[in-house]
Image 1 (cartoon, one colour):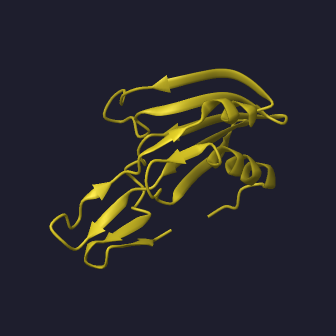
Image 2 (tube, one colour):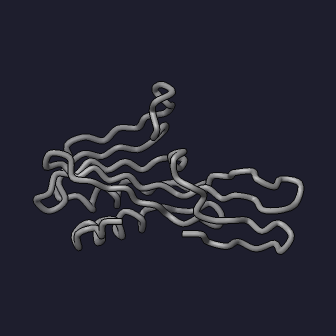
Image 3 (tube, one colour):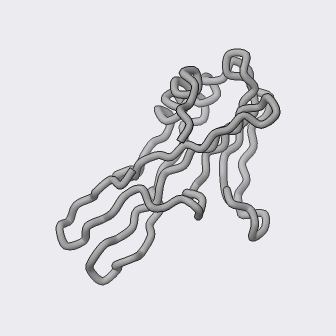
Length: 138
């Protein structure tokens, strides 16, 4: 896996500080790449997989909210803020998400925070039903 540049790590820390968990938040994932000079960054709370008990194998998203005002302050300039409420079509991997386009310092950034982890990512945490405990996987 490629390590993010220092500015991106700092920006991701600023963004995650605006995420408010409504229970025990699963590990956060970050996917990023530079696409023709625009940094596309997607943040998401990983899924939790139940291990054992009557709900064995069930995947559960983490309920959270985003404090948007301080999130916008993480940008040096904001061009566009949108909310996509539903999956556009079956190929839409991100589904519902908050999208912000702007500058971080001098870097063009397109940030998306998804409401549920994209399907291609494995669960980031196990809920050990028989032990009443969580175990972070990543």
